[in-house]
Length: 120
Image 1: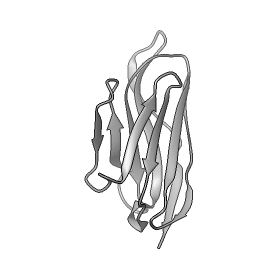
Image 2: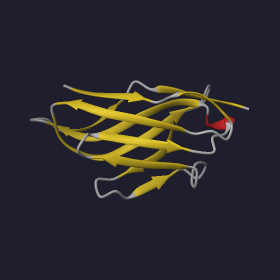
Image 3: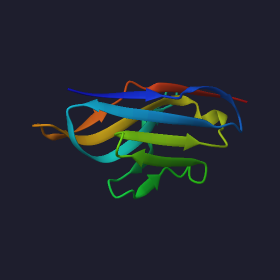
């Protein structure tokens, strides 16, 4: 059984910073791509950033230069450092991992989401 738990969300003023973490636990054999998505109020979920097993990264245009994704494979954890936050970054942030559970198949797993609110 695999579980992803996010932390680090909260309320911050525009221009501020937050760091999100997402740790995977359970019977995990291997993790490939780790990603962060977000869902603003009344909108669809969108990809924010992703990082491969080889540490290649990809960012949405709206966060390039402000957000940094990183991973610690020893801890099965992905991070999202968010700087220069804007009110339009307000959303529920979800982590996703494409991983293989022990004695299982490759599949996408999701965290429960963490709220990020940026005040103007």
